[in-house]
Amino acid sequence: MRATRAFIHLDHLRENIALVREKTGRAVCMPVKADAYGHGALMVAKAALAAGVQHLAVATVGEGTGLRRGGVDAPVMLLSIPLPEEIKQLAASDLEPLAGDEEYIDALEQEASRTGKQIRIHLKIDTGMGRIGCRPAQAPAMACRIAKSKNLVLAGTATHLAVSDSLAPGDRAFTKKQIGAFYTAVEAIKAVGVDPGLIHAANTGAVTFYKNAWFDMVRPGILLYGYAPADKSGNAALGVKPLMELVSSVVFIKSVRRGETVSYGRTWKAKTGTIIGTIPLGYADGLSRGLSNKWRILAGDTLRPLAGRICMDQCMVDLGQDSGLHRWDRVTIFGGKAPHAGTMASLVGTIPYEITCNINKRVPRVYIDGPAVLKPGYTPSYSPAI
Ligand SMILES: *Cc1c(COP(=O)(O)O)cnc(C)c1O
Image (cartoon, rainbow, N blue to C red; front, side, top):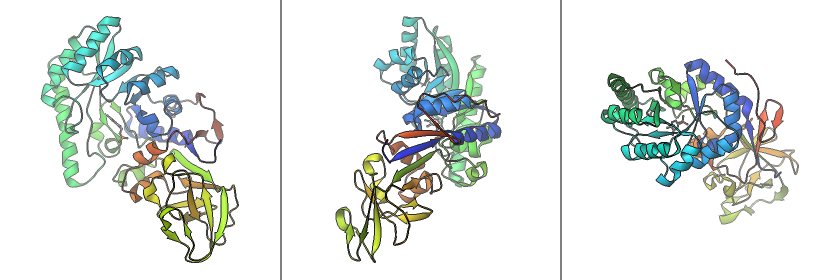
């Protein structure tokens, strides 16, 4: 295996799930879209289910089918809208789509009646995210349409919050309005005699800050992967731990003299004689080039600055004159004892989601559960934490 690899701490996942379950007391749906935010969907899904998560959520039909092929038989929600020609596979893979318009609902009914197998739908209400779903006023009619379709089941009713991760006064007011609109829509569905099914709305921000948005089930993503919502105050109290630890090794070491430069563009120049280490990790692995000359990696027990531009497949680190580091020694890029992906995200003006999603397929994932290293395909069998 190559030196550059991402350790995925499933023991941290288990702890984070236990924290969310203890805090909310609700059923948990874990989004494992985008290959579990870059952590590896199948291993994360299996570990999450073993730790008491009841539902999973994906963004594409292919992601859902991948989970089924891997032996996952828990309910899997499909959060995004597929093309009409994907509906056959959606149904065959037993995915539970989020739908909020007649055309999609009717296409699902058509497929379900063709195969004779029911499709479970979650009605998606757009209360202010502005992405997908029906307007709150349309919710009762849409719920009726699903409930009255012969082969569809209204398994749940959902909305998504746009600024629940921010405590700014305007954002708080908007979130309260969204939650209120959702609540009213759910009541209106009940008032026309339809069972709304499982009611769910809470992403990471709402799990952290808005108890009245927990309803029957919560859907926190980034929190379970171990990162704070944008406003960090609430999450620090919850104490989640990041799952991803990106490591590599120093594969080449050399001394440079004062005035010598390192990497493309000659943006880094030695102010004194120093030792430069080369790391086999670059922007093609997902290490943003915007971190050039900015990020510091953990070498031994000291943070050392990257030197010069990050290349496609390699980057350089200024180890200083007396780091005591040797060729082949391990370094940590983020996570573990080094600053985590959330800190890195702030530095380049993005969010931890993008940092972990960008660590791509070229970087092997190594799954760790406490001291044990798990082989892909392994199903953790610990008992639920609570
Ligand atoms: C991605 C997603 C979530 C999880 O969001 P986080 O910010 O990671 O907590 C929840 N619900 C929906 C519909 C999503 O698309």
